[in-house]
Length: 481
Image 1 (cartoon, helix red, strand yellow):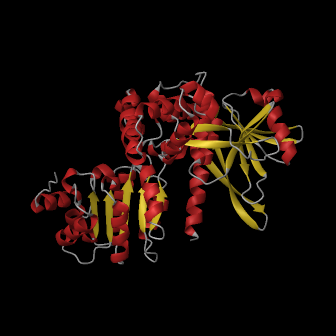
Image 2 (cartoon, helix red, strand yellow):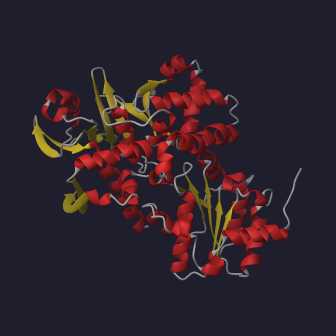
């Protein structure tokens, strides 16, 4: 049975959702929140008017997509755009049920009393059937309007965006918080100081950012908190939620994806099976796995596991890292791989928060560092051979040769016990890698070992450095386009 609310009720709701038409201000709840670093990338994309494309803002649940939209709306108003030329609708609101995008747009034109609407934001777009077909039509029909849509059913959005929006949509992925953003949100990023040196690389001079922390014990304390609670702004800022992170993260983030988004999109019938697999992966984040080992542990067929892993990766819950051998060569068949959660706090929500001395903390540290790298497109692998392993290896995009290597430890032992470094020493010699990094608990130093210059850096500081540099690099690249 189709039921539609009266026009008066719909208009009343639309006015409620667009308070800036009267006040020129978004709600204080949003304006008082700090902007994420990703705002610097998102805002120019929204303002871009020479290319007629809608922006599809997607990402996991609860990472701050709606807040990012309201920060963008306020900035547009502050830059002189008439407030009535900016319209917002949360499509998941029941009152809009069954109303097509074009019809909603006509309501906006009528209520805003402006024939010069320039920006239209549709939040939680996945609740509208065939949204991608309707949005493509709007982009083609209204050349003077910039359309921005967001959604939390990330896997569904990405597939439909790619299928129907070729040449019409630009995807923008908002991941969980980096460690840098986490510290900034809590106003404690002054723990870290940075300096800039310049270095000649091939034919250009580039800036090299160096980071230092004078109170590494305090930074480590915040790093533990980040691994437990730090991926989601609301969790980061709420002591109440941190007292029961499992309830909030599991109910609002994990369960809605596993029990609703993925089954709806892919027609998954055995939801319990999917849930069990994700729980298994979450507990073993950072471990080497194979389809055979997962299948024998779970009793699920290899083909089904392969599909589920694809779904979970599309939903931004996990990231698969493939293996190279001692020679830095990829395997023709990826029989072995590691799976990392896209944010370590997902594991803590399913099980228990970790402490600095927890036996499993090494895997959570690895997960936290890999979660910073997911913000880039760097081709990352791990190296594994019969009697050795290196945690992170980046291959050159054109030559496929190893460019650099990192060994991740939550211990100071490798600084004085070189036996712990034999694998990375072997790998660096084989590939003439000159300055590998080894993370530590709290030692920061440069040391020459067997004619290789090692940088020892606290894992917490390295995690900060990666997240900071990746976003800084993205902002710099975007400014050239």
